[in-house]
Image (tube, rainbow, N blue to C red; front, side, top):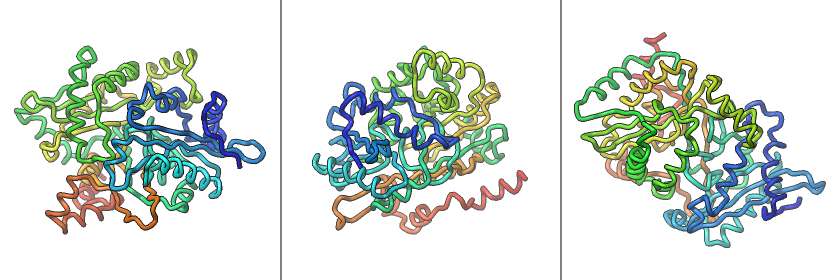
Length: 422
């Protein structure tokens, strides 16, 4: 086998060719946009390079056939928030051969170790965790835009190497042609009628205001997650709004205010994977025209809920239910949308999983985020945000109930609703 570091234009081309070779017969796979991948590895575009670095490699057989690829990366500030300084690996693709996978993993590990890292998470993104995060292990159906799709045998390649589950990610699919459960509506209406709360959707003409509010909410809501938390910056969000302006639907992005203070938001985008399926990862002029056509011809029938946040003080206030009450009205107007992918929610967030199930969401996909400790004698610990650590100390028995919660086993109240509906 021949391992090559990606340093030349022809190497970059080969890097993008690998998944097309491996997934050529898979009807569900969608080729990622090459331009987005290259933005991630461009130090002028990716802020994590300010205090970090990245490398990429491709793997070929002795007959010079492409058989794998991998990327390794780190940001010193984020790495040091872990007990062991931790980098990441991603963009992993490989034939079903443990020796080939081990060579890729070893190469990434050795480079990260030379940069001062003592562990690596993967497969993850060199950026925010709402995109390209985790290994798909269940639910090999159509992937939502930004959600990773993998071959089933990848799980064995990771776990045989020694990666261990750091946390589990659940994705729910919601059929929005069906009415929401009655109990959910009662909660939503109660929250929506509380006098100090105000709900409004985005108006792009005032995008600077909403960007400020989103950053304020997000950085407050996710600060408990420390090592897996990349703070939002207003400049990045504004750039994201500009890039996504053609697919933004104002009535799919909602904010909640309490006495005029922003306390929650929920962001939903059309699932452009239904269009990208036909573009082969290229966004040239012709494909831009084709993408514009798909976005404006009612051929995209799915949306993906990508990012949300509730400031800690309002986590138990039910504001998320109120948002869905308003979203339901929006979807009535956009009747061609029939499904929401609610992705993703971690095993460390049972409240959000409970809400998705109460809403009528069906568990559709499961991803694993793995961690590998370079020192085999080091103690491995699964991820747990600060608020769960505090809960564990104060309520040890209830904590065990939460971490033993099985999303495949409906709770009695939810089960009652399902029986009543049928």
